[in-house]
Structures are given as structure tokens and as C-alpha cells.
Length: 208
Image 1 (cartoon, rainbow, N blue to C red):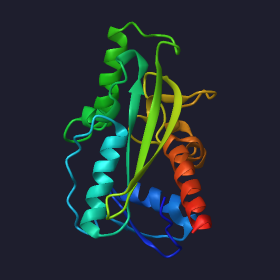
Image 2: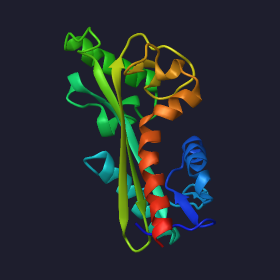
Image 3: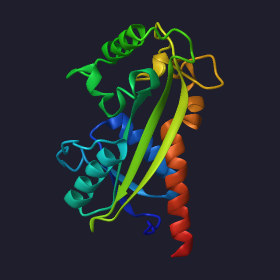
């Protein structure tokens, strides 16, 4: 891992202002200057990977090459055991072109009903976040975080986004969308991946 000294500029390979803001907050302890691929006018590459890691690498490498700066990308989604891991890397696409996540949640629920999945054990699912940190020379590091739980229906809560209203994390009885954001962020798949990333970046600084 190459070190990123305080004040280094890093590109967040996303055009989603909410995601850029969240990732910027998570990187703040390291004193890095954050800029988004959207602000730089970089095009969004086609995500042709077969795994979360492959898609994160595609996005990070494209931004690093385009900006000639280190770049960080994430790829995340919901994996449902009874559906063979679907929607997985296609989690956003299940909402259609307009990214209608209620429609996506309905599609998941229809799949579970077809399988006769009614108990929490039969409705197990987990969120995955893969982070890729790429440098302009093509070097790349990946970090993965997961949070496990089960799915409920109907959707509950207004505080989350995506599939949060149907996901109850293990050891809890409320959905991610019913949780206070601080509580969710402390235990989410993204937080767990970021813990690994930040530890690696701090270690690289200490070694340099």
C-alpha cells in the first residue's frame, strides 16, 4: 500500500453527491482533500465485472487514469440467500432505469414468496461493500465489508435508502431504515470496509 500523506488529493469515483459526501466524511480523519469524478467531469465507465470487487476496480481505475490522481470507488449491494445471492451486483438495476427501489424491493419479495420463504432463517440476506483504491500507475487495493441479517415485508422506516426498509441486521429487531443514521453507519457494510481501508492507509503512513 502506498501512503497518502495529509493534504493529498483523492478522487471519489462516483457521480452521486450523497455517496461522495458520506465517503468524504469517512475519509476526513486522514486529512485528505476529496474531489468527485462528477466534479471533474469524468465519464462513468461501464460496469462489466462479475463481482463487487471487479466493478469497484473498474470505476477506481477509470477515475485514477482520468484524473491522474489516486481514486477510491465502492460497489455494493444486497445478496439474498434464497435467491442464490441475487440481486447482488445488479442491486441498483433491479429498480429499473428510474432506480425505483420500492419496485426492486417488491421484486425481491416476489422471489422469496415463490420460494415459500416465510421465516427469518429462510429470508437470510447480507449487504456487501467492496472498496477499491487505485493509483494512476494501475496499482489497486481492495477492501470488503459485510453485514448479515434477514428481510421483512412490508418495508419499514423512512431513514434509509435502497433496500434499507426491508433489511433487519442480525441481533436487532428494526430495519436499517428505522435506525438512527449514526447507529446504522457504525455497523454497516460500508463502515466495515472503511475500517479496513483506514487501517491500511494509517499503516502505510507509519511505514513511510
